[in-house]
Amino acid sequence: MSDTPVIYVLNGPNLNLLGTREPEIYGTDTLDDIAGRLDDQARTLGFEIDFRQSNHEGHLIDWLHEAQAEGAKAVLLNAGAYTHTSIALHDAIKSIKVPVIEVHLSDPKKREEFRHISYVGMAAHSCIAGHGAKSYELALDVAARL
Ligand code: DQA
Image (tube, rainbow, N blue to C red; front, side, top):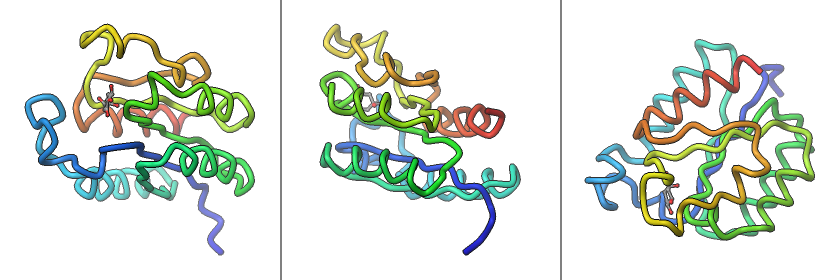
């Protein structure tokens, strides 16, 4: 096992379709493109990333618990639409000591009203949103400094 500190990057529902999903909102980078760039950036910063996506709320909750159990240094979480609905994710973030940074490609506050509430954001350390795929890179910079 390597001693390199690990940052989890967790992605929620529909983000597997990035690249073709509403490109006018989310851009044309795929999740693999984002993961590849983050991998390089993490290495430069002296970290490793563990990059995952699931369409299932419970997987995201299990992975937050796992991040703590495995001693991850931080979690970047783009919970997709669960951001706006999931008290279970809110509770999971509050249940762990690992800092969680909320990430969004778009800026939900500038979109439909139902996206203005963030149960994730109420529990997260901070939020980076509205920079397209670059939101992930900015969030990784923040996480690396924590
Ligand atoms: C999103 C914003 C959410 O409102 C939406 O449901 C997503 C993507 C983003 O990255 O901009 O699935 O999290």
